[in-house]
Length: 513
Image (cartoon, rainbow, N blue to C red; front, side, top):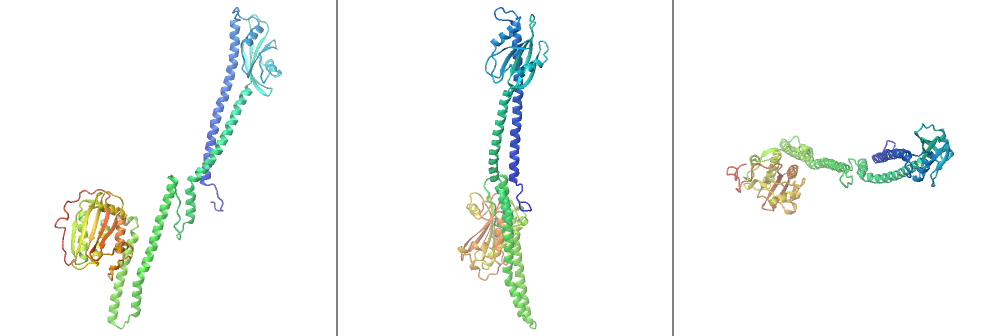
C-alpha cells in the first residue's frame, strides 16, 4: 500500500508477471528455434530435390534409352523420356524448353503453372553457363516458386535445351507458417491458463503474507490477540508461525509487566496504608509511641522489601538470562541445600542423598527453590518435628516420570527429583493447585506470615529448567513438595542401591537450627 493509499505492485503481482514472462520467453525461444530449424530444413530439402532431379536427367542422358542403352542424341527425346518415367510431387513441376520455347511439361493438376509467363521470363533472363544449373525464386500466381534452370547439352545436338524444375516453396513455407500461428495460439492459451492457475496458487501461498500485513496493522499494545491463521508447511507459513510466536512472547511480556504492576500495586497498598496511618496517628511528644511506631514501620518496610524482591524474581523468571546452567555435582548440591536450610528453624533436619553424579543446572536457583520449600515447611510445622530433604534419580520406568511430564516437565530419559517433606498442617486437596499461584495461600495458612509468592517462585525456577513441581499432602499429617529437573546430559554415576544416603549425610539431627 503506497502512501497515497493506492495498492501498488504487490508481491503476488510481481511474482505472477515474472512467472508469466519467463513462461512466455521459454515458449517464444522454443518456437523460434524449432521453426527456424524447420524453415532451414525446408530450404535444404527443396534444394536437394532440385539437385536430385537434375542428377537424374544427367544419368538418363548418359545411360540412354533401355532399348539400345546408347546415349541420347536429341534433347527433346531425352527430356520426353525423363518426363514419361518421372513422377513429380504435388508441389513440383517439370518443363522442357528448347530454343527458348516451352516444349514439354509433366502432367497432373497443380495450383500453379510451370509454363506461366513469369516463369518463362525468369528462364529467359537467367544466364546459365553450359552444363550448369541456377536456382532462383519468382513470386507468381499467388505463391513463391523456387526454380532450378539447368542447361542440357548433348554431343550431337545443336539445339539449346533447358530443363526447368519448379517447386512451390511458398505453399510449403505457408504450411510451416500455419503451424507457427497454431503454436502461437496454443502458447498464448497456455499462458492464459497458466497465469490464472498461478494467480490462484500464488494467492493461496501468499495468503499468510496478506494476513501478516493485516495483523501488523491491527496489533497494538492495547490488543495483542491478533494472530495469523496458518495452514500447510512452507517458508511463508513458517514466517507466519514465527510471527505468531513472536506475538505470543510479546503478549506474555506485556502480561507479565502488567501483572507485576498489578501485583506490586495490590500488595504494596496495604503496607503503605499502614505506614501512612501510623504516621498520621503518631504523637511526637510520646517517646514510647514513637519507638513502637518506628519498629512497626521498619517491619512494614522490610516486608515491602521482601515482597518487591519476590516480585522481581518472578519478573526475571521469563528472561533468557534467568538461568545460568553449569555442570553440578548433585551430591554436593544436596549438602549445600542442607547447610542452608538448617538455619531456618529448630527442626529435626534429615538428608537422604540418593542421587550421585553430575548434571547441568543452575545450582544457585536450585538451592533457592529448595530453601524456599524448606522455609515453607518450617512455617507450617511444629518445633522439633522432622523435615526431610531427599534427592534421587527418576528413570523411564519410574511412575514419577509420567507424573512429572503430566505436570508440564519436558520429556527426558532421566530427571533429578528434589523433595522436601514435613509433618505439618498439610494442605486441603481442593487447594493444592492454588498454592502455586501468585499470592495463592491455603486456608490452613491462617495467620502465618508470608506474601504467597514463595511457591510461585519455586514453580518458576522448575519451569525455567524445563521441569515441574507438585505437592502430595494430607491435611493434618504433612506435605511433600517435589521438583523434577530433566537431565540434559546423562549423569556419570547411577543411583545407589541403599535406600538412604551414607550415615554422615543422612538422618542428621540439627537441634537449634
